[in-house]
Length: 480
Ligand code: ADP
Ligand code: ZN
Ligand code: MG
Image (tube, rainbow, N blue to C red; front, side):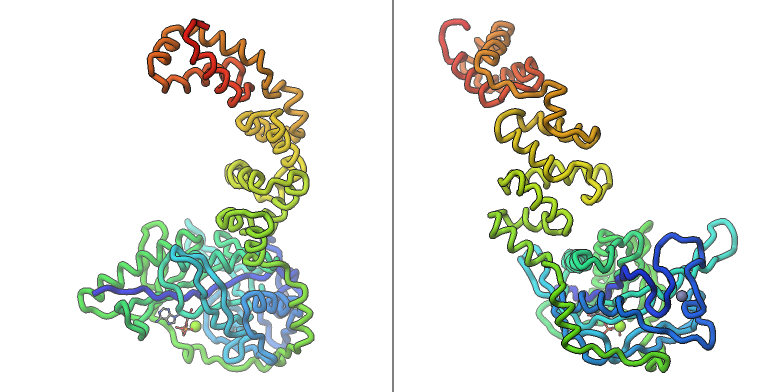
């Protein structure tokens, strides 16, 4: 029997508000342990939480960007459980009345674009962090993260493969970053993802029993954990055994999922409306205000790049995956209005440099107009494409402009016919045997001659001119 995977994701995104969700403490990451705390986020008795308006607005941005309906009235609830990183003994979350519902996003899959429905988006507070000592039998609690705002984005079970799950996660991360409400860093935990997965016989509709996977701190790990879990469930079902509904932890070192606990039910948490907080009322005026301030989002920008700059979909996809990269591209276009050439350069040379240096485009030292200048030098034949790569490297190590690097190092391309002819003559007279072989039909030797001439010119000869002159000279019957 064939089985079809069914996957739904619950994504937690830490919001970039300056202060916490219910108190004035800073949300800045990396401060000394327990320095960003106060009686409210430490859960002291007798204090009252006050909702941060900026947080609500950030969540509204995400809700609108993912086509959700924002509830005119939503409510906070207490989710009760014990854990040492949760000083109040309950987490303030939203339960029966979430902030937003019923949205969708388009994702890329290997079978083309697909719509994935979003069940709900709600607000909640983060818990603290336990720090385990590797060598001592102690654990420490850091409450700086307690009360940092989160949105939880719950998808419908619309994903059908680990690849689709990764694509959906990436789509949401790109949107969160475009909206500037979350930095989307899975390794650092500002974006976290729990994956729910079940199998069902292909062609049937009822959902199978699911397991929930936690502890995947990269896109790669989300995919690998799902792949492992799908294999595990399939093996059980094929042997006629049933799946136990449970929560599993991904162990990235051993590449296996490990049972953590039996799945708790909602009623285990004794959810009830938080009596310390008034309902959140959002009127249409506020919604329209937030909508009007939304930036152009990845999908729209990609479509526009394809139309306006006649770029292939792949290029448009890569360039618009980050708002800052798209902006960089458009700024280069202003100095050098040949979109495909700019796109090629960014996608190969620039992204490679960024990756190599583990840098973000925001801090890349070559400004867009300087890259535009370099591309102009290639287009006008001043430097060859090959030399330009060296120039580009030097531009960002030395901070100099393309023109400066080219002038200082004498990298101007040799296009002068006489100069190239002289080099070609030298090469041909130094290699009489190869010349004879070429004329005898071994035409593959052309690459050898071109290489020799390029070497003599230290890479500066215009390759096209070299080719033409070589062809002309080698075609002659008399010796050069
Ligand atoms: P729970 O109450 O166990 O948390 P929810 O109904 O809240 O379950 O769903 C949590 C997530 O699991 C959602 O993203 C949802 O799409 C997904 N999900 C629900 N049922 C299944 C299933 N049978 N197989 C795969 N995913 C599922
Ligand atoms: Zn506080
Ligand atoms: Mg749930």
